[in-house]
Amino acid sequence: MYKLFKSHMINSMVPYFILALAVIVTFHVVSEINVFWGVLSRFWGIISPFFYGLTLAYLLSLPCGGIQKLLKRTQNPVLVRRSRRIAIIILLLIVLTLVALTLNLIIPAIISSIELLQVEFNNYQVQLQDLVTWFNNLDLPEFIPAIYMDDIFDGVREYVDNFNISDLAVSIFAGVGGAFSTVFRAFLTAVSALYFLIEMEKLSNFALRLTTAIFPEKKRNTILKYTRKLNHNFRQYIAVQTVDGLILGTIMTLVLFFVFRSEYALLLGLMLGIINYIPYFGSIIGTAIAVIVIAFTQGIGTAAIAAVLMFAIQQLDGNYIQPRLMGKSFSLSPLLVIISVTVGGAYAGVMGMLVAVPLVAVLKDILDGYMEYRENKKLEMLGATDDEVLDDDSAWL
Image (tube, rainbow, N blue to C red; front, side, top):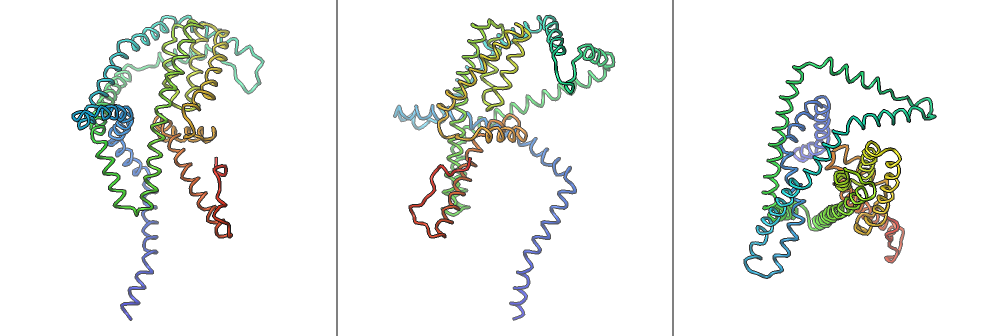
């Protein structure tokens, strides 16, 4: 009886002990929050190249898988047996070819555009002064302050006069150190991406075995279901945004060159195509930059016409081209997309903006499935028949 009482008493005290331990740990974490975040930041600084390498390997696995399927269709025993390695070699050759073409064709054109922009800087400064004068002469509300270029120039002169050469030396050394660190981390990311790409199938099999070993069959099937859904979403999102970016960038380049005769058509079109990966915000930011450049180089009137035409092209892309490329996999409301991109960018920068939409689409599916399950359970408890099942119109958002 004593042993039973003792065992029961100990068992009843275990939850209180765990709660007290959790309170103590939480108190120490909160009180040493700076140290805690410092440790996390240092840990992230160490593993981040491998994380970005894994992300890059995953992106490269998309075309690599396509090449591998083509090799298997040849039914050649050697190609089929070594399809993974041959696909990786072909993919690396394609990537190196694209890099070489970029360095020899696109980069020189961009550099010449930047040099031209620098040469014409004085003219743009005069146009900026005219633009500021036009803005100040508008009948604006009192809470909008006027812009005085003299104050801006005086501030720049004061900064130049008070600039210390020793600060410049420190900045240069810091910049060299930062550049070396960036190059090393980029090299580490590229090397880890290559090894991750080679071991991708083994990593997938290991993750599958680990999931099977830890979770029961029902939970394992649910996890695998949504993992496959997430993988499908990422693949489709990257493919669609790449194709759409190529279409949009090509159209914008042609319009800027043939319609507006802009010397920066290639630079602006390339920027608009790349920044299109970020939903909503990317097109807005890219269009605004392009309009500003045209305003300085070709006048406000031309910039206004360009803004209207580029906005029309963006609407055509967003309402016609993208939905047909995307299909029904990302049937999210615009508000939910904007919120997800904002939150993803706040926590993980550009990478967070890229992964936000596919991730939120899967989270929405999980929430829809859970809500449908709970609502059907309530119908069963109320005596509903099996035919009374909720349709897809009840899905949230």
